[in-house]
Length: 496
Image (tube, rainbow, N blue to C red):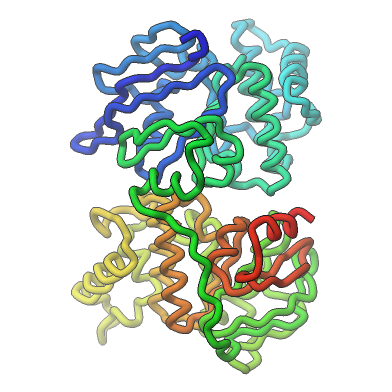
């Protein structure tokens, strides 16, 4: 018991008739790196909200922090007891300086009439020294790279004397080098006796950093496991109840005709001299670190940010793609990296999102949408793509990330494209939903669609692609046959 910082037992939460959490226990030791995993809807967010005082559990919960029983935890009380959260959106003030973001909250705790700016700067400097970072105190936070903004959020927590740091999807927008730096900082915090609760969908990172892992499924706790007891496959099974086996894509199929060829494609400041061929029924992976030009290339191919030079050929015909309308006419569709703001109309119903690309097929002679055709179309899409939604009248923003992605893909496939560009298709998606997305990609390839799979995740491209292009600094640095490559070799290529 002397090593336990947080002991939360018999945590349950119901919203009406929906059970979000059922009799869950969580124990986090002092200085422990503890990971929390589960599919979307498994109860992770509800559990975090309870232990930070945002949500009150059902009667019968037993909560102890640092050996003291807590009857009713509020957000203020959680902060006072050293529980801090670094949210995925970081919740910083972009117009304030680094020093102000880090030190002002702690300075305000002294309840002085005037802010002592010297104290604010000293508090910020002390927090940065604790983890060995040196950011300009007067720099506006909004001008910093996302990785440095995350360091500001961590330092803000340290300035308020954090003893348990909860990190929600902390690596979603980081490069591999930045991820390594963050992991080093978390271990540095551990050396100072600060515990970390690391919430992530990325199993490789979980396995790299965790000492123990707690797995939730459908609102219940599956178990807590020492790192040595689990690997990627077992974690996938514990989270979903299904065997998740990484099968390499069968690449021995005959090479079909080219559906897309690009030669010398360039756009100043984004990418230069891009050359590749995509064949019908092929899944071609493009991988590279943040800033390598992958997304910019995708936007050029879809006509959103057209290339300035070079040639594009589709099915042997020259194609001039200057807008997304041009791309769609040529049979190219694009599933963007940021599905919430670019892929779906978040506040519109799921049904409206599904039919938006098929209006011509659903309207009658008076150009009015047929209710019967609309119902059949949306019900078919929901069934065929396994979209989990109680009603297609619900807003798309109410869906989990995986189901939002299925809506985006279903929307585009209704026009029967020749080329599907997927940019970060499984970002923020749990392991079960990932498998469904991969099955959809495989089915499309079998139907002859050429797929460009753009990702930063090595296993994703390695096990789902025929060939892999490695992009660095806006250029294609190497090409690999996926079937002859190992994860370690591709990681080295990414890092080199």
